[in-house]
Image 1 (cartoon, one colour):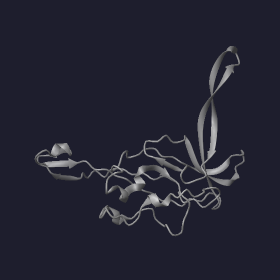
Image 2: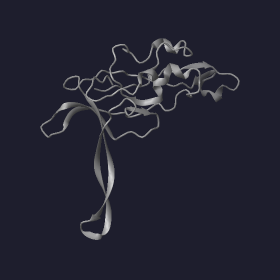
Image 3: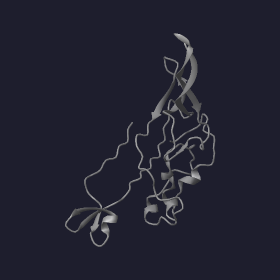
Image 4: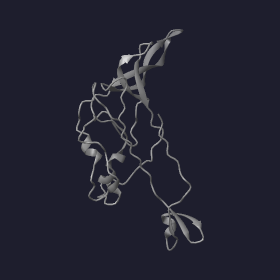
Length: 192
């Protein structure tokens, strides 16, 4: 499963006048291609071999050991680390924060090699900073504070935002931040 976004080739533009070049690039005689950002929010309900899934992070750490061929020297040997992210707070990764190398939804079953069945979540890019958190408009896209956030499924929260927030960002109709209440994610229904 892959989600991909790419440009259509149509610029967002305005009439170029005054100090317009502070806000974009000239693209024609009197036309300014304006700066804009794109933030996309996906809320996915992903079940792996049933609805009782966990969120697991694999990463790498180094351990210092004596070199087998020269006991007077030491080497830093990489080893695999595994952590079950068992609360929503642990599964919310802010922009610019370091993420584990591998994050996946894991089932309560194993494959023929003894590994948990699962689906990897791979974040390959991020739009970067969004509206400053102190802005009165930021609540409308507060979900953009995160490059990845996994929450427990709640029937009363079918969406994490609203398309209407772009029209009135000062009084948003839905706010992702309310979704993070520290709920347990252990062997539960995780919508992604």
